[in-house]
Length: 194
Image (cartoon, rainbow, N blue to C red):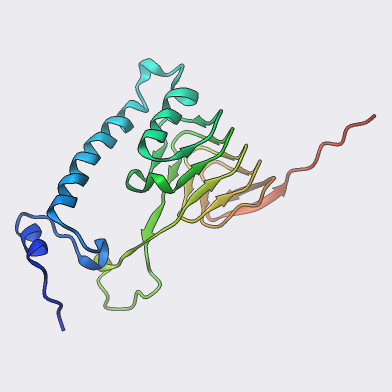
């Protein structure tokens, strides 16, 4: 049995905005307008992240500053490479602790379709989303062109190799690589000789 759409949803569909209640939950025209203007602000911030003229200060000053304006929690001494893409509508789900390095071209994704009840004949476009926090702990590094999926914690001092797809937590002081990323090495302790 089809659920009757509210007047707001019918109006939004009439003007060409086909939001499904399953996908977006309760939505109003005011929320759509607010999101529109919020996205313009976010687009301006994101465009500033790659201004070539500011390249000497971009990775360690400008980009971390702009990510904070988007809602990310960014610690001290963070390095953000060029063309890093964050999940701008869920930037508040990204935590980058002190001295984290995110290399060029990396994507930080905080939402994905919830496939837990997806079955033959279902409409993929009507599936809801599940959100997850991305937490990069102190001194961790993600290599170029990697994807970090929702709900992942990258442990302190961990290194993720270039081009990796991180779908699960990476333990502290390890090196992980691949698609999906798997631990390939443990980082040894340095013992001092007295």
